[in-house]
View (cartoon, helix red, strand yellow):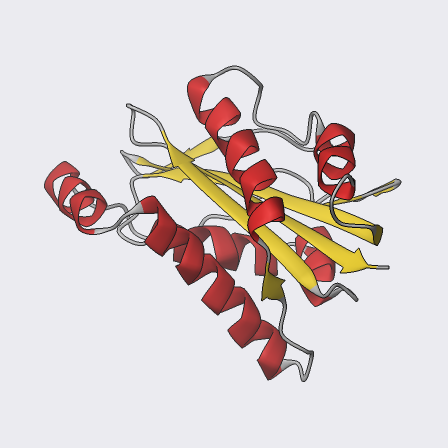
Length: 179
């Protein structure tokens, strides 16, 4: 499992942990290819966007990508998003490392109200980009393991994003297939 970070430019960081499929962990690649933004641009962009709007943007971009591949859209599920958001918040607060730690517990919690046959997870974090969602989604799409999760035979998803005081955005997307 890959969980490293690296700097791009003076203020930009993007890290992608390996795409995780339940019982079949995959190793993804790190990707970063955007120009850094100034602190003022970053603060302006952060003030203009709410975390729920960013979560919706991830959902939209992922479904647009799936449509371009002639795949059915995913349905956003609040129960799954709750678990994804809690994981992103824990990573942002430093209560858990940037990783897939606790994935099995998240899927078990979801399974109490949503029977599923398959689950996977993508996580990312970045800092210093004018469009943190685009950076996360592009990073996932350029990584084989993450892209396989995005293109997988799932019908539901949940997305959670958290931001800490340092301006780091943490992303978790969980994919599930209902039974």
